[in-house]
Length: 464
Image (tube, rainbow, N blue to C red):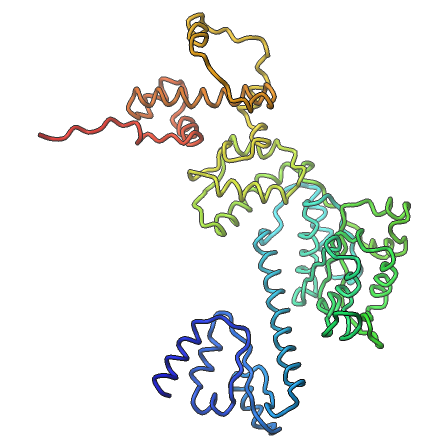
């Protein structure tokens, strides 16, 4: 190998690409190191060797050397192009599935976390029915954890080694719905330049989750029912059916019985899907799950975002438990991610949570108990306020009195602590004793307001 060849190889291995096409003779004679280096890349490309003739033994040697495919460069150009396109498409589908799996792993803790009796019952039922092949219907509000229960059915059953494919029926355009579920053959319609495997076929020997199944167009529900009953599909434009071995799990946040009565969902399809029916309770009905869920998602976000956040203050935990969570677990995930990003210390405090949630904390609860009658303010303080010509932000006029009162309390707390820290030159013990609170509570308040004792220390005098 010449120096120029070695330099070219080093440059090549610094790039990212999907397909590597090499001459078979050169690859085996002069470039075994290149083949090994390509196979060792983090995102290993598909390796294609070009070899003329049809020597089966020779082709076996090439495959053993690491080739994913061996093509004859002397064959018809259209056939060669089609073979390369098929290899690229196969790689694209594998990459998409890895991406979906990574997203599922990132969004969810590894295990279901629950201490709620109602949720425990749902989990135990899911485990018991995991070994059957009967369709299952999971009901519950958006974000309550229906996909997690479907994933549990997949993981706990005999299909665990097969694929787990999720189809969001609400996100599919009506004109592409049939092709996405059942696939199509080349030339089936305008724009069908190649054959496409549908989600049923991709889920073969695994589990197919039809999320938001109530959104399936009415005219396609009969074909969906037939596919579930007969375990075979007919791709768009195909003459022959394709047999599939798939377990169906459906999920929806709608009342399917009401949809059937309204004529928007076929009754026979509903009865077929609901052989096993599980109802996931909303998060507000299982508040005992919130602390454990918050800790589990905090661990996930701490690893994903690289932040050293250890836990929640007591005020923050109280607010999380008291909040009604209209967006359920999905909303909790987003709130924890936001808090980890905004947290300035090692503990997530009430100030790191959205205002709508922070209002359910102990400080806001104490404000609710304060009567609207004027406070017993000393006369000298009244005179000071009267002479100060205080101007409030105009935006506060759009907020409720309770919100303004809370903001004033927090701002007053910050100014009060600032004065004490300045007077004591940042001696936290003295400030805590003067304020009548514990040092830990003081540190929590200082962290909430971004106050550091170091900023108030008296400058040291220089030695003469």
